[in-house]
Amino acid sequence: MKRFYFLILIIVLLFSCKKEETSVATPNEVVKPSLEWTKMEKDSILYGDTSLAMRVYLTTNYADSLVLRKTSIDVVVDSTDLYLNTLIKRMKKAMLDEGGVGIAAPQLGINRNIIWVKRLDKVGKPYEIYLNAKIVMTSELMINFNGDGCLSVPNVTGKTLRYRAVGVEYDLLDGSHHKEVVDGYTSTQFTAVIFQHEIDHLNGILFIDRIVN
Image (cartoon, rainbow, N blue to C red; front, side):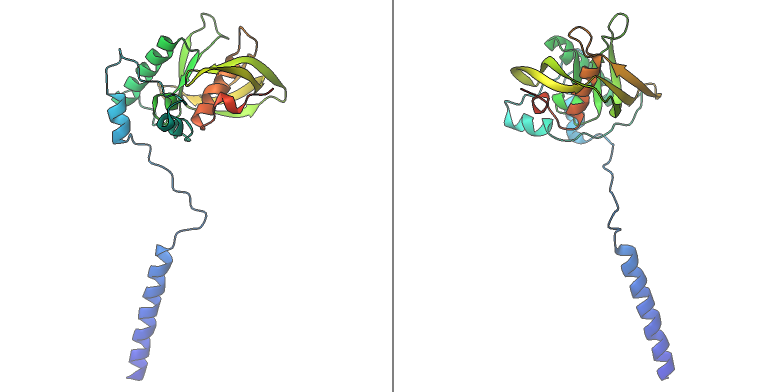
């Protein structure tokens, strides 16, 4: 009889230990944020049709500045996504209305890795949209770029420390993935600087953080 109770006790202890093991999280486990649109993002994106620009967030507004300093997350690439398409169009409208050569989604209150860039290095200097953009390589040579400015930092310009060329990686709306090296750091062709400036926004960095004397 004692042996029977002893076996029961062992079985109970084994199941108890197993339960504890499965409930303990791995110390190095990283919980990735959901890439689904939040209700706040949906409401903001659809608050006006594609002919209306979204409001540009400014550092002079405390609540805006907190959003501008946040790190953004990726977006699911889906050419049929109403929210993504509307955001892209309203971002471009805001950029063109302000006379910008680039804009990032956080500047409109949406912390997603989406940027518009004017490709001064291409024929016709087209504006192009890049999703989940990131810098994966930088040149050894750095330059002082004079005249850096930002739609979100009103009435301020300065000389910033930038890489002469960068390797970038991004997705296009059609689902294709691309890598390229972008050059351009002169006063008339500064595409590499634009990429650095806009991707900085995705990481909560503003051009004023790069200003040099």
